[in-house]
Image 1: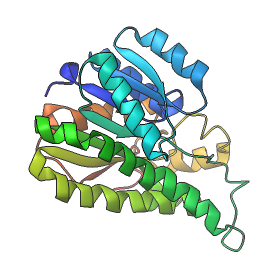
Image 2 (image 1 turned 180 degrees about the vertical axis):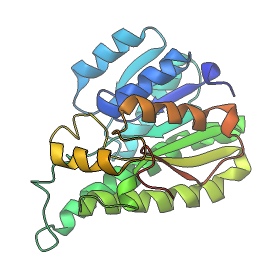
Image 3 (image 1 turned 60 degrees about the vertical axis):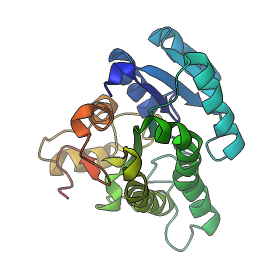
Image 4 (image 1 turned 90 degrees about the horizontal axis):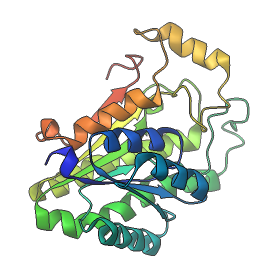
Length: 253
């Protein structure tokens, strides 16, 4: 299915990477659902910028009923079912190496927050859209991961472990859902320059990335967003269960 014929749900899309992904799909003519939890004003501003093919809908991705309600509202608004889900939302985390707790300090509750944000959130969106995707024999699930799983430049224990679990989720869903024409893939960026989540990242960390990356630059949100188009497009129709690292070559996996 061509992107201009699709309806795309992007979680955590009011700002940062999610907003860039929303803009990228909108430019290609897709209907875009801008999901948010607290940033209502930013979400509505983004929708105003994108135009009539976008709608802002509130839902905490960790809440199954809220996600189901959001999906139904999106279907009513566009009179079309969701064809692509981008699981982008980041729950209660900032990339701040100075504030990150060490191994003897981090507690299990921190891990639970990231597992719920990464895996439970993705499970809720997939299950809310699955019946429609089966009926149309088409669906694209795109999960946002991190290259920190392969190369933990900073030991963000709970965040990286949650994303590692999301990679396992991605591959199991790909195996299970392929029979219905649904592909499930992951995009793993590095630290992006710059989002709200990475605004606390020190210049030292960004300098290390630049110095050790073949392209000698830090990847931008817009560059990563372009990759989401590939996974949603007809060009990726034979690709599923994959983790594409988009970080300028820092990690070669």
